[in-house]
Image 1 (cartoon, one colour):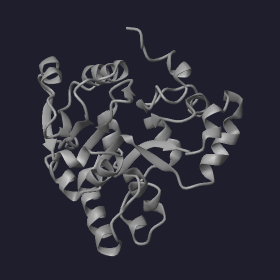
Image 2 (image 1 turned 90 degrees about the vertical axis):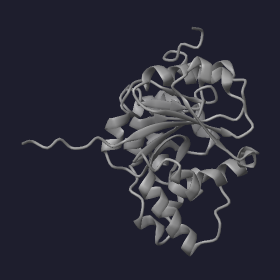
Image 3 (image 1 turned 45 degrees about the horizontal axis):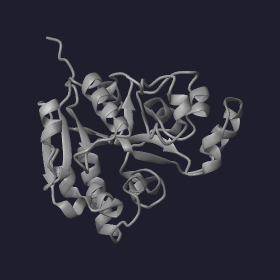
Image 4 (image 1 turned 60 degrees about the horizontal axis):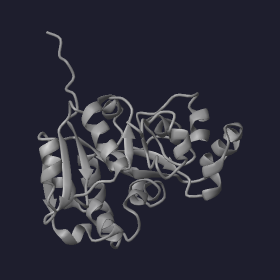
Length: 252
């Protein structure tokens, strides 16, 4: 009898901080619930936040509450996302897709990305404003810049393997003091630098990560991928919204 490989269990996790969503956030949520409707979708939120309107509009969403102070600002949110207790909430799944509401998913490739077996995946980010305005004919400069540095894989739209991240955080907490920076840097940039942490996460190359998600410099990135859109994008209203207007129906 032929044995079929088990598909990795994956859930979509959406952080929500306030009950009133912007037009862009509403579009992002609607797109997520349309394209990724075949997966469990869970909103993580402050305990006191009333999201009854969102729940009424999307009854299949599960609301998961954390203490209010864990959403009190960027630093508090970063600490939540490097907390082992956060990931233990999702132990029923092998993977979670963090989908902040400044993301936009184009097509359902979620299981395909899970099958690749990476422990953490996000959009490569340069953190240099001058690269946000690179034109299409500057792709070689962009590629060289990406190749010359340790790349942050942005956490706003990111795929995370639960067992691997729990193990990574346990080892990190044993060797190092508490992490104070952005949570995505700990799982990407620092994971390629710190010893022994570089041994404990399987990360994609920046070339492959661009197929997963664009963030900064989307026009130049579009050239690097041969005019192929990624699975999703992050911060599309912030970085070159004129480029994204060709692909995201903001007026519908």
